[in-house]
Length: 124
Image 1 (cartoon, rainbow, N blue to C red):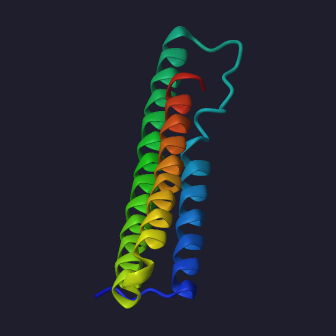
Image 2 (image 1 turned 45 degrees about the vertical axis):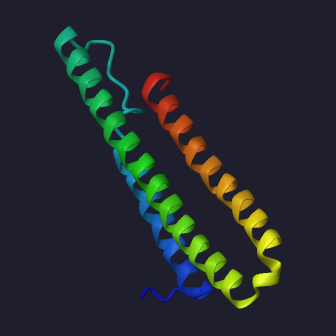
């Protein structure tokens, strides 16, 4: 079984955040590249295709990391909730209520990531 304490989870979150930040910086370089005024139409089309491809890669990585983080969080949260209910059955209602509220918050973060990805694809 996976034994994760708070220190390991914090380290994992920091590493995932650093990887996500590095990937976003690497993949968005082409989005902000400027083309000269003398660029031909073919160069502009190639730059647009590269930008679109980089947006797709960045969006895929972003939503993948968000979904993966949400799934890991929900799994650990569910395991700890089950453990808490088995240790103290009389607090079943309170534990289950905070479990559902926590799942709503985790899911909200994943939905925000989806909205951010949609903004990356269609607005930028």
